[in-house]
Image (cartoon, rainbow, N blue to C red; front, side, top):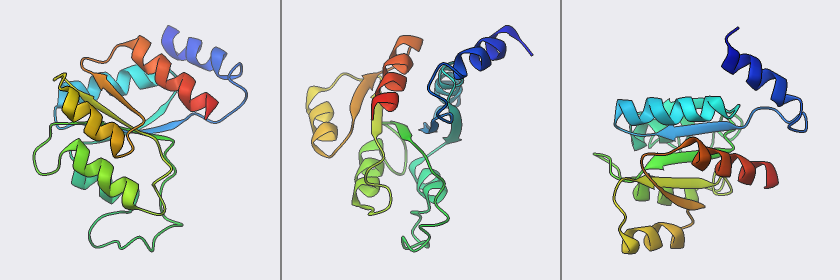
Length: 152
């Protein structure tokens, strides 16, 4: 066991015996996806990654051929972090699909972007995003998210 996982396991008991929060991280850029994944793991989160919105919807049981009837199959995620700019389906479109779902609409969605565009940020927040964060994410950003998860 390396020092990071030893530290993670020693602090896990302090965090009210709740199971590790399960976070779905969606980003088309492999490096950004790996960075988010590592930051979340460092904060004692269980992480599933997806390289685009379509894959994220499939994982959530909301794919086009899955018609929301698979409630019992939906993997429980406590938080979704998605990049805004992705080919095929933007983070905003993914957010809308999640918020339209009766099964997933209560799951907090955080949008991340390298571009600080106030109209885009407001649009995402109005559509139900929990938070909008600028890339690159830092450990302090993830700690903020973790605190929010613990308090929700």
